[in-house]
Image (cartoon, rainbow, N blue to C red; front, side, top):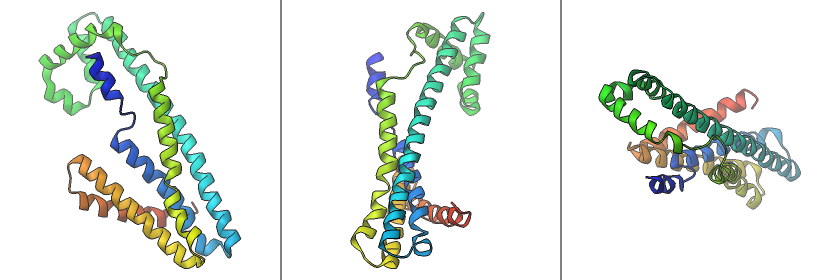
Length: 220
């Protein structure tokens, strides 16, 4: 069982984590490229805006990576607390109540008392071998992955400005690239969830476009 757990932990970031981090970074960068035609005039100003977009995503990626580490530590501490409480529970009913509080309500309703008791016995058995509330190398890898995904999402939007001299054309092409990436992200998420990929792609592209307009209108 321990070997199986290690194999599952080999995937530090699941597909949802990877795609959502790309979406966050992409939306952040598009708020900059979407204002270039209004806020800039000339190649030097465009270059300044591009560096600002990259700097913003660097800061966002760093903050997101730190929050990833904090979330991992909190979740591990919460699990440790649950194991400790189960070990000290006076009776089966108390232990089942602790497990029920930690699970989603629908899952608790579907499981029933017998399944909760079986789970309680297994958790008590492995309580002494539970993970410690500290960060591991996998957590560091996950944080680095989060940072790189957020930062890397900036570059597809910057390429048109590096290749084209016409600002208006570069802005349109950059926005088009952003919408294509959003469509692909929605496609991947919908496919992972078992929904229709093309519906997820269109929904993500439309949602992203609306968010960008709203963020720019709000001064973001």
